Image (cartoon, rainbow, N blue to C red; front, side, top):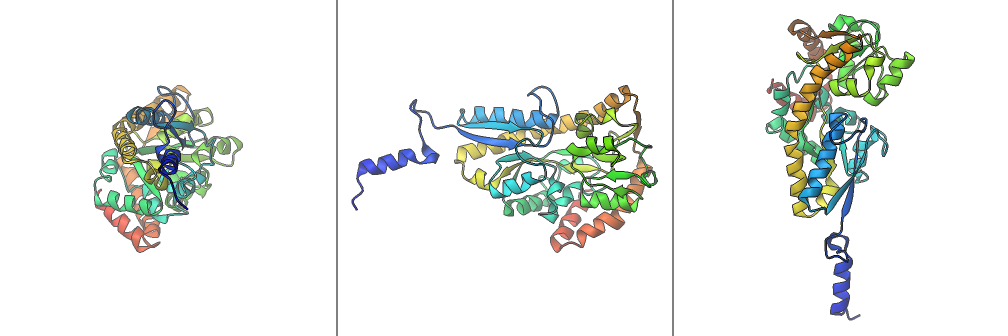
Length: 339
């Protein structure tokens, strides 16, 4: 069959990557961002929701509107834990995601919520440009996921029972940790483990199936746990709970974009890390203020009790993680070197 020049031209113009509108502008490609946190606006609400809205705005501007975004807070597009596998399959474009939730699929990522391993924001943020960050990035790339924005958050403990500061305070409490390793720590300290995503903590505490929960300062605030708590321990002076909760993108979707769009996404993602750090640290203090105003008793961790938590973590969670695979053992070794 003879293919004419006109047929070739028509085929090129109909290809999605170069589709042109009648106005002469490139076609708009709409991408979806999902997360589990409460929705708000670009200036109000949970900073993680605000961050993805700023990301969407700035990438749209950088690509002259050729990329547009739809944002689905509160796991309204896809269930919380399923979002990671959605990225891997290319069924979801972006998520801001607690990385350790994916430990069932990729055990290595549980390094992102290893009790007492990261003790400061500076230490966590240093991962990105160090060997630990490079290796973790490679693990995710091989699974079809890209890190765009490195976000670390300190955590605290909300309790509808007694105060939880030292390990002995968890004895007999039905408590949530947020990862396999965190649960091992809390169990060794005497807690009864209940595993729920952070967006289900309120209901679990309200019904009594959960006595206490460890999660990020921002989640403790956004999920209004001051309404059902009697005690809270903040991470403003340090914590055994630091989580890597990055903005992630499906690698297959990223690879399908033209180079200038990829560069815009990478730049905006990296630029937002300072915003995330400032916001997370501000929420550590806001946690104490908001819970205090609600007549919840506020406490803080101190060096002595953090040392107690670390000793238990090394003997339980760290050992369990290192024994899972040589790759896990190597990641733990690299992370310890950053302390």
